[in-house]
Each structure stands twice: as structure tokens, then as C-alpha cells.
Image 1: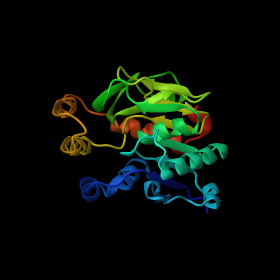
Image 2: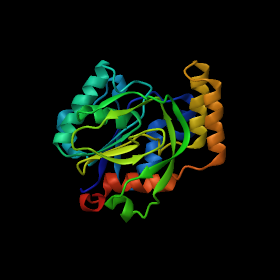
Image 3: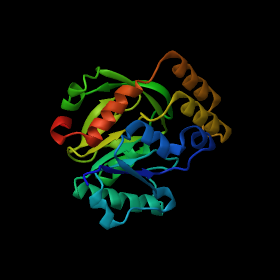
Image 4: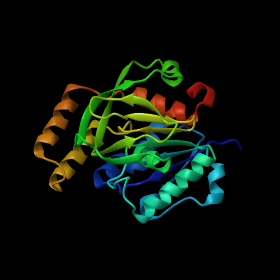
Length: 246
């Protein structure tokens, strides 16, 4: 009794590379967020696998992953996910959205998303953190590098949502909604090798240009993402006291 229980809502297929080295994207999130004595479940929502309504109350928090799909599309599973997120909001459940998860949370709460005006953002980028109790409690610097890999972005925040971070490329790098929902546009769970593997796969599918891959590789060579700081930030939000967080 008293065991913490979380769920990862998987919105993408695992690549062979990620599956072999990290146990899939679920394994990557477990490595970043999981602690002993917790139960972590996975639901591949992009494949139509969702938790039952009566199960939702037993979870302490949810994590929404990245995806190759667009948060502004109306695929059946995306519409169903939006309805689920509205329920979780009404229940005041802790929800952390990453990349696509960040965008779909925005849409579910009444905001707007779409193609990034400035195009793909791929590589390591420093984001500017707004003043907050959470950042102060964790003694985070005013700028924090993170791995980015997206061509969509938040266009308009939901009513009452607040920007927590921004960059010279993306106006909404992070947002919060109340004290229970947070979205992050970048990928705190990614490692450099995962980013470069994705970049190569996107290039082979003609979704990006070779110059973009080279720019991503250059950024990876020149700087490091602060993965430990992002890990502490995500875990504190998902598992910490609401008073501590905001």
C-alpha cells in the first residue's frame, strides 16, 4: 500500500536502435524518471491502447512522449488522447508532456499548435528559464541546454497557462497549467546518440536536408545537454509536493 504508480502514454513506435540500446522509449523514460518501489505502466496510445476510465484515479502521474505524428491532426487516437487529457485535467492529475506531449497538452487545454514558423529545430539549444519556485528550489541556472528535435510548436497557449521557458528559436519551450500540468518542447530523455540516429533516419526519408543534419552534429560536438538538471526538474514536478513545485 502507498506505492506510487505512474503511466507512460507512448505516442510513437520504437526504432530498432532505441529498442536495442535503451529498451525502447519507455525504457528511456524509466531510466530518467523511475525510482525503486514504484509501478510504471505503458500504454501505446498511438496504437489505440488507453487506460480504462476507472483506472485513472489509481495513478499518481502520467507522461506523454514525443511522436512522429502532428498534434494538430485529427487521427482517431489523437482525438481520443485529447479527451483523456481533458479528463486528467479535471481530476487534477500530474501530467508531464514531452515534445509532441507538450503540444497535445496545449491543444487539449484550449491552445493552438502547428508547424514551426522557423522550421525544424534539431540539436542542442539553451533555453531561458522564467523565475519560478520550482527552478529556485532546484537552484537551476537562468539558461539550460536541452536536446531539441521538432518541426511543430505551440502557437498559442491555453487560457491561464504560463510560459516557463523560451529560446531564440521557439517562443514556448515550456509551459505550466495550474500546478498539475507541465509541457517541455525539448527532449530531456534523449541522449546525443539517439538524436543523431533520428537525424540520419529523417534524412534517409527526405524529411530534412543534409545541412540540417550537419548543423545538429555540430551543436552536439560543441555543447552538452544538462540531462541531470532536466531529470531533477521532471522528477520534482511529477513526484514533488505541489507547494514545492509552484
